[in-house]
Amino acid sequence: MLTLNLPTAGGRMTAHLMQPPRNFPKAEPPFSRIAYAAAHVVADPLADREPWLDAAVDWDTTIEFRRHLWSLGLGVAEAMDTAQRGMGMNWANSLELIRRSLDAAKDFPGALIGSGAGTDHLEVTQDITVDDVIRAYEEQCAAIEKLGGRIILMASRALVKAARSPDDYVTVYEHILSQVKEPVIIHWLGEMFDPALEGYWGYRDHMDAMDVAIDVIASNPSKVDGVKISLLDKNKEVSMRRRLPQGVRMFTGDDFNYAELIAGDEQGYSDALLGIFDAIAPAASAALDAFTHGNVASFHDILAPTVPLSRHIFKAPTRFYKTGVVFMAYLNGLQNHFTMIGGQESTRSTLHLADLFRLADVAGLLADPELAASRMRVVMATHGVDA
View 1: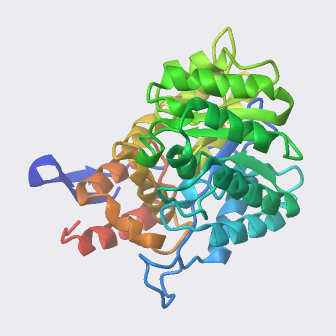
View 2 (view 1 turned 120 degrees about the vertical axis):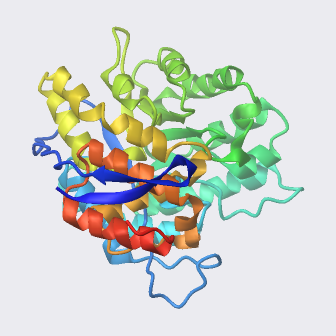
């Protein structure tokens, strides 16, 4: 067994004895729950670009990771916040990512893929208007539909700036929903993930905001496949889930409580659209397969150890969770470096990464312990730690 010396709170070093990896059974989809993993992008560390100013994407490795997710029976939520939309990935690069992913999905019959449409190419100025927001949404939706993609309608920072009342949100969403070719997934991303989205739907109070969102969905049920809320509050999600019109799905975006929300209760359940499924894909696939075949105990047994890891990766400031997701891909050999677009690998502390490693190991998620240990030592060495 391998032992690493890793930092703990208070500046101390503690020996960590690694555990054998868990053997996750190969799944046989389809699953009884729809499950999308919001997928990250892989940077090109050798590109001659300034990482704070211009995204350099390793397209081949990025798409290969999507193939990894599809091979496990998971869907891909493309060009979402996990792919650093608004934190390094602009609309032009996001559209190229969507194009390449849609093309790759053709190799996997029945592969699920939804693509994020937003307004992030629109400059947010003091005089921005609701009509500006509508035109921006129209442009991105049309571009995705032209490629044959299904839309995940992302929350808009520009709309927060332009809206003067909840009615402005209703106007924008009803206008866009009236035009889309196929039902969309509406994504309500909370301010813990993006502070610029505070007050979405016209209210700071989430329950008041929920009333507006429900009204929009209830007025357009045939145009809404589902709604994903990322508020990290299971009670709010369940409350909204029970209010959705028949046929409209709830996709959990709760990276703190996903297991119990997917399992559901006597009144319903949530499907999944989760960033953490990028980092724990083999476990997620095996757990969903177990659940599909009626083995609820195994479902919880597999996912329970992943929850502390997820809560750590998504801890405040939650918007920096992408660093943990990419770090997991690096540790597991799914990319050969720990460099991110926008230099985002620097957003988490040395102690945070050490705790992440320990939690991932305890959950059995480090598939090749020797590789993970060697890579962890390299990262720790760059932080001045002799692991």
